Image 1 (cartoon, rainbow, N blue to C red):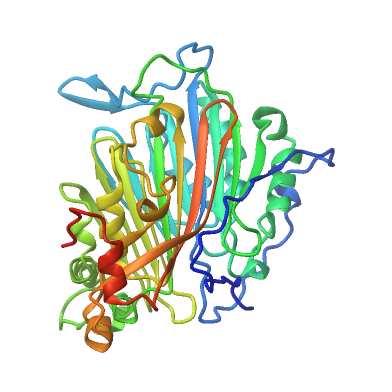
Image 2 (cartoon, rainbow, N blue to C red; image 1 turned 135 degrees about the vertical axis):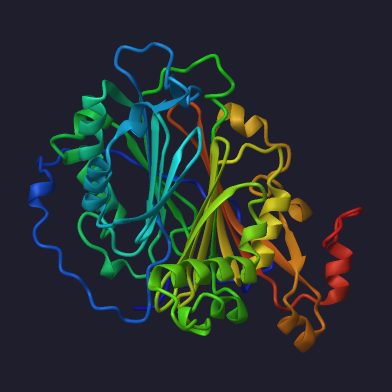
Length: 440
């Protein structure tokens, strides 16, 4: 099956697309027991890299102050006791993951959250929030009912639910209920344990003939007066057709074997080498990093620093190469971070999304998703293979399309598509370079 087409023949920026709002319909009730047998598909050499992302926020039952995201733990003697969702046992987390058809491989923790590398992407658990990302043909939405029940046992109720994903490259490979966005919404609207509790709405942002973004939001938040809890934001960069030399760094057999080294130590060593050789370890300075190299190819990484996480997932296969970078860091400008991520992987195109509270969006001073002209362009140093061949030392990415919408009460969703302009000469890059801008 061919990938979705992406026309970059025009140098003019396309007008902002009006998001499609999809409303619930009257549908028969069903539950997860009606899913039938899931048929595992043989690996074809191409992998669905773009992830499905689920974020669920809880609050204590009867609480009028909203989600309690500030208190990371409770003191017990000389240490701390994990509270809220962080008190869930491994068997509970395994049950959540089993519904999504993923498994836990490793974990890192700090005072504020636990971060798990999964067989297909990542899981982040805060006291009152859980973020689950899965790629491939996983069944992410099927874990929501279990998650709500586990929260109920902890005395928690739903505060906010967000589900999002880019359009699939290989939609025919997906399993129920992920074979289309309408099927996903039908599942959420009709599941006997979900429809009354969630009552959310679905949206489509971007051109349906090219890369676009699906979003579902169920907002039951009690707005607080705290800037800490109402300034959340999540940036996601989805990169396609990455540089071949970069892709080769994430093939397991390209690394030496050491006589006498056991498998666990080998995986740790190669994972660390891939992180260093690609420059990934420099993208998250000061963070605790948990990286995982996969056989025959592929890579996942979680990094946590105080309350924030960053995560990277790489599918290097030729014809479907893909890298995602996501973070919930709260910074005034993402420009440097975006440039560093793009220059690390040198994709031919990328999709960038931002989901933020109103106050969080106001705190962002520079945002290429909202800028126009030069402010929306992104330039990074070219890899040596390109500069040696063409003499072009810098790569220019131009935004081709963009869309934004405010959903529910104060959740802002933005997305944009950027395309590498391979026909841009060094003189044009110099002419378009912002005054005073330095590229290292």
